[in-house]
Image 1 (cartoon, helix red, strand yellow):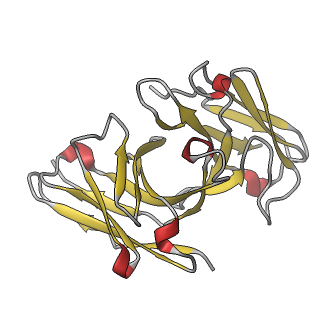
Image 2: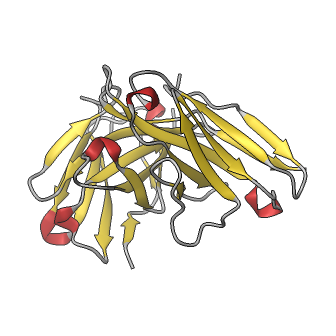
Length: 125
Length: 112
């Protein structure tokens, strides 16, 4: 069974750093992209960025470029999302998801077929 | 402000048909990119409901169907059931400044 398992909930102070994780299993981790999605309290889904674990090719949504860092450790099939200095506005649930689709068409035509359970990050103001 | 626009809410009685619209533009849906749909229950992760405009993954009931025309797409739920009460999001790709996946604003389906 293809699964993405995320790290547990975090409560941090403004200005602190944080790295959350997403471990894939049941498939070839290095052969598929992994993405991150933010959902702020009571709000919709926002695409943050994506990484290809085999060569660490990383692409960010313009809204999140420079705000977060996406990385991966293919030796342990794990992708990461990290912040160097958290703000109260980073309070949200963060999901990892696997983009999947017809490789002949390319990444632009993919859909998110598997999702992690979500990691709640709380940064009290 | 989401790139893809959905109605905030739709409702229907059990057994009725409801339609959720997803309106985009020439840089996303209108450019030919697929539209995908996700279902999300409160406190749960989103789940893929419809892929590539109109494909149902294994296990998704056939009362859910998707379609696309021009710069818009729709999700139809025929024979609405109580367990369909959830949030629904469309998703596509945008090749303008963002050059990224984009989600709709989300629609809350209420079963009366």
